[in-house]
Image (cartoon, rainbow, N blue to C red; front, side, top):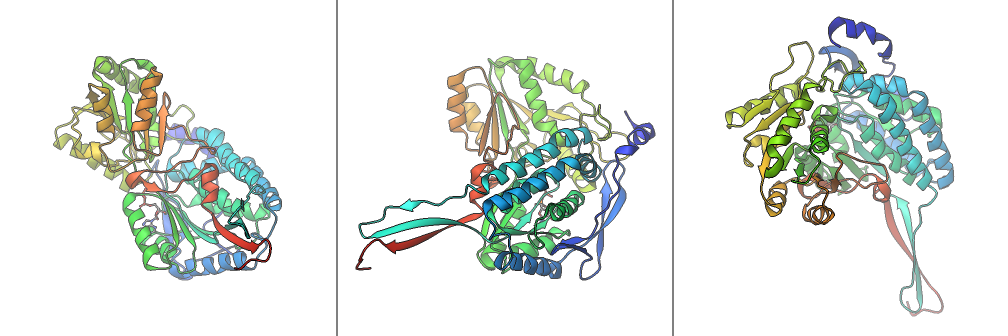
Length: 499
Ligand code: ADP
């Protein structure tokens, strides 16, 4: 669908925006300076709400509340079972409000509404339940030590956590970090992305309704260099967990180093390769390749933006790709027939278009796409470059849009070498029916997750994070819980010890 008709047809799905203030110590409040910033609807570029603009003073207040809640409050002192019960209620509330929440993310980020309601929200609830299930299973070890001594380890919550969230998955990444931090008994200050603050504020309200004590989750909306930097520089935050660009990740680590040496966990950019071998099912491989770069309009840190196809099937694969992009619908994210919505904002839209220009200037050729859709809003169609050289910027830098570089390779060794020829190491994909080949390649690529005959598959039980300049630390799985815990050793003599 398109234009006015679509807008009216789906008007009932568009939620009212209820929460626009900072959430500190259990209350919605204006920022200390009283400033606000706008958030826009990427379908039109229109302002949809004015949001409280938090800065250093507000982060200070939020950290004070989180510190009190950690040092004196009930949350870290409750049994894991009690925390788990509260978290289960939180999860139920996410499901009950799924439609409204999905609407907020569509309105704010241009994400597909039907996907949000059917997949993102149930997954967010499942993430909370997964970690709720772990909250009463946090154990240390008994140590043998030498003769006269006995030791145990305690796993204790790390303390006040700063959580900095990007705009591409305002719900998914929020819960990937908040849910295990809650289970661990931490308290937190969350700084959502300035492009997508709406759902995080709604979650703060649900957390309160669920019975999460005041001060445990604080949400300070605002900009990166002000509110975000105040989090990473804060002397009273024990850990900062960040997802975003490699450039900002570097600043966060510096800020941690010059302030209080807080623990840092960084999930950063990627330029992930997808290797398609001669024996692959071409139809399936084409689906995986398109999914890899078009899902969520390419605004995915694991997007497989470098597609390497072995020469035996290259021409046929290319034809398949073109065919499949013809039935791919770009349009209003509230329309259930849409495959791809608008880019998140004007900045990203222009950044992607400038990469496309750069690709043309460097001599790559457009197989499909390349121009913005001729309509209001930030829509860019699937764009595929051929004749791409490994050293071109479009093949090296993260574009964060629906733009694929399609390349050809001959031997397995060459494929592995070129796949690894990047500073990033977040993810990689392999399409082949040959098990030995899949095993060899998956062990040869330096990346945090390898997909064999699938793409972008993530799950709460599967640790996720980067190699190389894609960061360090893992979210999700038990690794994602353990990072919020620190190990304390307690030693006692067993009998009359000389120590
Ligand atoms: P992207 O390129 O995906 O927008 P960014 O790394 O710029 O990613 O932003 C991700 C998150 O980091 C956002 O919440 C943003 O506000 C925040 N951020 C940006 N700059 C800084 C900074 N200097 N310090 C702390 N946080 C920042």
